[in-house]
Image (cartoon, rainbow, N blue to C red; front, side, top):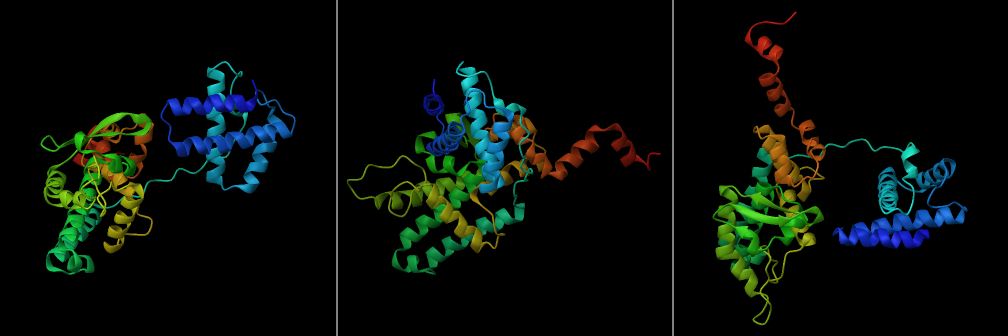
Length: 328
């Protein structure tokens, strides 16, 4: 089997596992370029030698940033592992090659007070809508109030359930159980999980669904198909990922939050605040929808209070020290 044929089979396997179109395009570019390079250098793609791979890595490193190199190498390894599992090739030739590793970056996290400042901006928007304090409110007070209610519900839901922005955009009415405080979402790999909603999130959603969403939905026109998504834009259609980013970016700016705060920061803050409050790491793993506990463990590095508390409660010498004097 030729390399391009193996690549097409690999891409079909990614599609069968519900990999996103962006992931498939990225992998196709990375693996396609790699196979073309091997072919141009007369190397067998099934078993390229170490010197060949080192030469490819050196050339790749010259023209790309370290993050890009790491992403491309991950695609190549995934391709070779697939070929080995499928019996197309013997194994992963990159396993014997030392490749550069990216330093582990800790996720940016908001303090609880910063989340409250973000929510306070949505309260200000609601007051402005009621008092005609913005151009939109003066032109269309019902629309301004609907948008303010939606934005409040957005922030409360994202923070309460620790949702990815794609999950927030795709959330539909049929998956929302407001009385039980549950929102079923499809995460990575189309795996379903239940996001939990506390009282503030339930109240914000109830206000939006009663008084805000009907106003937004009516702007789609009488012949438009009623959207299933929970969160709608000002034209009555679903509020997509790009629209969500724009709204949350605006709120973060008005709240005076630091540069670089993104919608995903709310998810990181959700996890860290749970751990600071004493939640078990495996519970947080389940709520985040992480397949591996190792992925969730990064939050222990940004939650030193959680580590100190666990140490003091669990280690006998920590208790002895706290009880009376220094240990020699």
